[in-house]
Amino acid sequence: MNAFCAGEVVGIWTGEIRVFDGVGRNWLRKRQLWKMHQCNKMVQDSDKKYDIVIRSRFEFGPNIKIDVEAIVSKYKNIDNKVFLFGGWDCVPPMVFMDKFMCDGFAFGTPEVMDKFCLLYLQEQAYPYNPKYKECWDKFGDNVEYQLQEHLKANNIEIVYIGSKRSMYHLWR
Image (cartoon, rainbow, N blue to C red; front, side, top):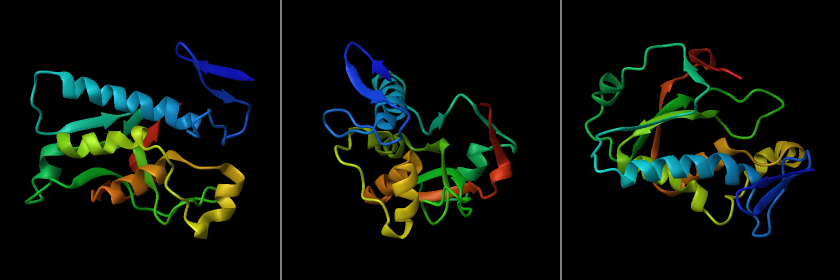
């Protein structure tokens, strides 16, 4: 067993996906979503005003040109839109949502990205879709599904900028 520490033990990894700390938070939330939340706080705390905030995992590599200005200019109002890759069917055995949504790269207005990054503060996980109970029982929860539900709950429209999995890669 390994403990994840940051001054105190916040979760324990036993090889299982669904391992929780004392307040019922998934360890993925403690790691990935905490980092995303902290990065967004740096944007909020800066003295600069941004039109668009881009979130990208360090290992994300687009296979297409992402012209943010051209993408955004197609819309009259982007105040409730987040732009990301996705929209294709999930691949077995990881079928946990209707259409896959990549959480590795996204952009939107600072207000939209603030909401995007607030999933970390969500005390309770959004309930899984009973349609995908078998996958949830076998593999546990996942960030993509939780993020999709969080965006829906905050009235953020998901706009897919690339609808083929081959449009990006992850350097792992």
